[in-house]
Amino acid sequence: MSDPGPYQNTEAWALAADRADPLSTMREEFVFPRDRDGAPLVYLCGNSLGLMPKAVPALLEEELDEWGRLGVEAHLQSRRPWFSYHEQFRETGARLVGARPGEVVMMNSLTVNLHLMLVSFYRPAGRRHKIVIERAAFPSDTYAVATHLATRGYDPAEALIQLAPDPGRATIATESVERLLAERGDEIALVLLPGVQYYTGQLFDIPRITAAAQRAGAVAGFDLAHAAGNVPLALHDWGVDFAAWCSYKYLNAGSGAIAGCFVHERHGKDLAIPRYAGWWGNDPATRFRLHLNESFLPREGADGWQISNPPLLSMTPLLASIEQFDRVGMAALRAKSLRLTGYLEYLIDQLGGGRIEQITPRDPAARGAQLSLLVRDGARALFDRLRAGHVLGDFRQPDVIRLSPAPIYNSFHDVWQAGRALAEALR
Ligand SMILES: Cc1ncc(COP(=O)(O)O)c(C=O)c1O
Image (cartoon, rainbow, N blue to C red; front, side, top):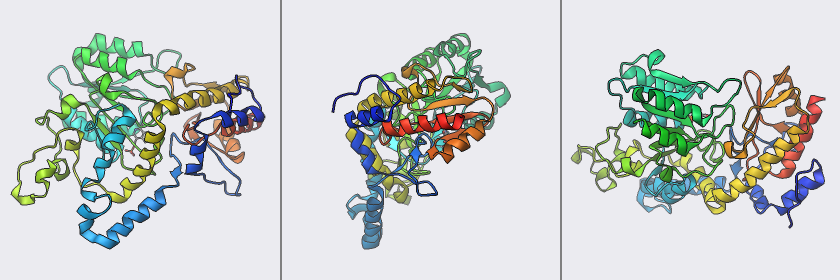
């Protein structure tokens, strides 16, 4: 089907754009929730909790069958042996974030992985002991870094540098991060910033920030909760030291799904890096020698940061989800995402400003799929009216509505319906 050309605020244009979309059939691979009255929901909430791939129940059923059929012997004999279950993501997990095989491991949850990374990579020494995060960071990240400061004897009030948005803006310019690192670099041990900021939707310039942090002698780590599966990443080539992300947002693996963790190869090869050890991070050749193997020998790569054996039932949905991302590829998803989110922006612009201000950058290169709308006067009431119009985004206190068309399952028609519902809700 041919491209329908420049955006138009008509249902016919949206439907034509869907017909021209090479990824339009992916939608059929997901289960879409319905509203309480049975009406179809326009689901623009993939930045919070992604939809369930239809392949998940059968895969879970298979694992349950193997458990029933084989018991403990499923560790080695099941069709996807549990002993090496996490290794199924070695290639696909790496491709998802632009890493080399071995730099990525799927394990734990996001905040737990951040803690594990901070144990290893926050190495304060004298004056260089501060951690940089953004001022309105997701609270779990703030709690995590404050814990590491406190447990090493630093007062977070002194040692936590919280980057404020630039004057008159909701976002933080890359130049502001670079300036801070150039001016105060000798105080800073570690920078932990988002890939995509959860509240504003800003996509940070990961390669430039990584370079600036490392120039200053600091470690560069990223929370990719809102970036993984949303924007193309090249963590290896960018030289990022570590990163962690969850799998229940754009990655559609279910609430609390097993998270991801990236450790750059140059650190993965360094077996002397201190870490919280557990048997699953040990060299698999000796992992099962149990009491005969008293000293911990970490496996090379991100695998060496694992602690416990992988929780099978939480990991299985990820198989379905990562397979989809690997099949479609982040480049194709990004191409669609730019057009889809651009369409949402176009429709919102047609509403004529006034009560709604988009705080997400207008530059498509500086954002992912999400648009954050600051609503003056009655933000919650507007959100509720939108919800009553069968559009599900999410509301963030005190006055922001986030709408996020996920390119893997949302359509141009979804976005057009959201635009129409927003116009009605404003009336
Ligand atoms: C940016 C960010 N960091 C951390 C978390 C916490 O994730 P988890 O509960 O998986 O540790 C979230 C959850 O939404 C998040 O959005």
